[in-house]
Length: 289
Ligand code: OGA
Ligand code: MN
Image (cartoon, rainbow, N blue to C red; front, side, top):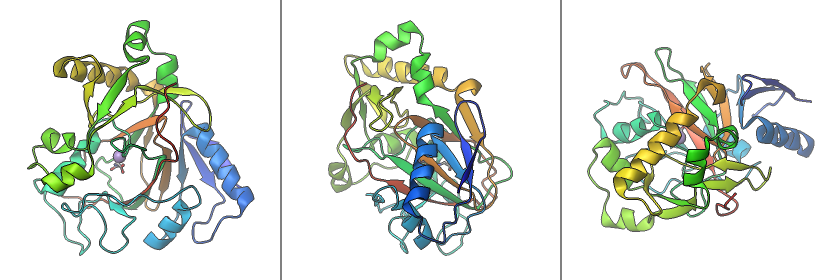
């Protein structure tokens, strides 16, 4: 039996009674999945797992994504399903904020949903806090079902039936890194997704935007597109729609990338922060809601 305790009225719940060192039986898996669909972000406190156990737990929900970019060393060399959300390299060395991988990670301070630049974007992500920050580094999540439900009419009219472009190549421009190689760019061409998507499990519509990847919106010039994404993100980022996760060591967070966005708050870069993430491959393309 698991226990599920909500952490915020909008989204987020804590799950006790799961041990990630062991495989889950089907009844437990289903109970966790139901809670995940209901609360969108679930927290499993006190899971001192290895990367292998992290990947094995992820596989209960789908296939782990292998990050396509290798040049900035954000993908683990040891366990290829692990994405390193860390300011420490795999040899334990603290990295400078000016280092290109760190600059790219800093984009996560803006609202986004993971891997939205893929033709089949990610279903969800699992983030394991190994060394957590005490000076900041909160991970904040927004319930995009609620945001869509309560979107002012003027904004609703601008997103219904419309698509936005998601381009991984936007990241380097955003953070001032050198452009990726032609081969890297060709491996992940921009994609267009509906701005309102229907969730494949719950059937509910939500606003689907990702401000670090959205560089174009159908029928708008670049500036107008940028302003619309900003305005939508600003409306979304209200405390009533937001769960702010304050990390404890060995929390594992699992969130739904199809109906939430997230952003991390800044922290002192001289403080070590080591977080390992798996990302679950999407099971279907984005369907308009
Ligand atoms: C992520 C991310 C959040 C964080 O892991 O996908 O955006 O807390 N980072 O660093
Ligand atoms: Mn992210």
